[in-house]
Image (cartoon, rainbow, N blue to C red):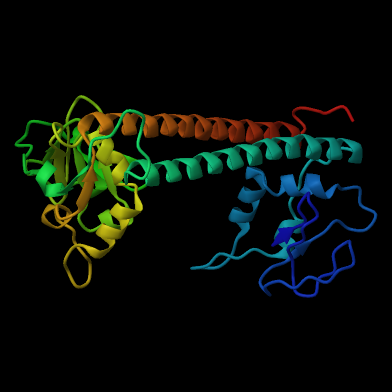
Length: 324
């Protein structure tokens, strides 16, 4: 089931005729929600009402089906909500649409920053663009020449609170108790600046660098390695691992018929175009600065979205009234 958005976009059933008289065709499993003729309800207000937690809870509690849950027109029609006068509805919709516009502008800015960073990475990490004062010729080396795998085991040094897993989205996070093994003696130690990854998931981006001073441990099935900081900065490699060069290599590396495993012996064959350490530091600093900007904007976007949701809760329930 869908509705008309504040912009006038209609999502609905095949052949449904919206207010502009045009016929729109949609998937047969979609529905159309429109105000009844003569009812004082603003479509923008209705749209935001359908975005609330209360409406979602109403649908979830009344959904039917075993494997796939379904709702029905009668479920939507039975939703009870406080309805302010029409002028106040329009005012509320306008206020919330202003917040949406701000969120859209932030999204556009974040996307532009991400494109800028991607272009910078392509230029700086391949030597296409050199920083001022950098003229030394780059070396061509394999990762195994400037990094080493670590097999250090825990041996009861760290407790279970220091057992971590690697995820693509969040990096290294505490491992859930329900997936922990019976013993942690064989878990591998990860020091500050070291990398860890699941050999069966690195090809989808599940690799992370540990940044805190206190060491942690990961599953004994993981691969742990660290760079030789005299030749390859971990800060620099942390940006290289986000490039097309890295993705292309891990996409074709490894062994195994059903689930490909990429061990350090495989990853070590990755060929790097390596600048001097001083230039590595300068490049990493430039890209780190862009990352800081992106984190700030993403945090700002999250905060703005939370504020909007709080405002929706206040305005759409009548807890806060808007002078029309």
